[in-house]
Image (cartoon, rainbow, N blue to C red; front, side):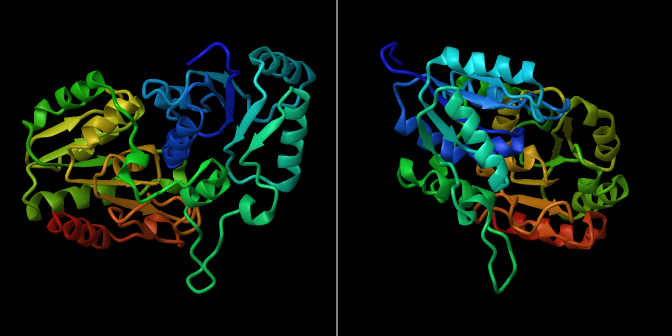
Length: 337
């Protein structure tokens, strides 16, 4: 990084899952601006379960700092403070790596950023095809968000979503060691990882379903270990479910950073969880995943990307997903390995 070059600001809202879905784009931004200071303009966490982009991206060298963007900011004082903060960076280039937003919101954003001094805009979705996810007319499945983001970033060069290197979090050696140490309870053997938590009740499969699934997997699979990951708030709930497992277990909820969790998940033979950050972390680490989705999102839009995922999406609601269906999907994934 050199002092002679102005910084680049990346506008990206969201939490853990949103960050992982955008990883290929952050790799492209690093390749395009290797010598620039890269600052992310992002929302502060809205709950204790939403990991900040800075936590996910800084250690890997994707960004060098973060600027808070309060969601719903409307006050003159708040806008003025943000204006001064952005002007102080002296940045002229803005990478607009935004979630789906209306044309009106995008126009408002661009006007504000021009007032803040930005002159080069990358990734602003000027037409509807770039603003929203495409829909397959035959299956009615929605384009994965990773593909829509990559289309918006095409000006930076080709982004190969099939290339595992573009999903690499660039973990440090200390993060990998922390992930390995956390698995001592399962004696370094094969294990299944699960995640029960989540910010939205619409994504909650229910403890009874989890207990039945875990009991069936314990009887039928040849995997000795079971590991739960998630936030500290998920610890007690996960402990109850883990009681149904007959082999070694590890409850890592609240014990690791998101990046250390990724290091631990990379060693799992299977991950099962609902639509949340850990599901995307597991997929990015190369672990086979079984994602559970209800009517909170459209089919495929937020499914983990790639052939290693077998998401189950039930538009009648996540509680309508039968344990038998998840069990059969999990067993099929285990047999592939």
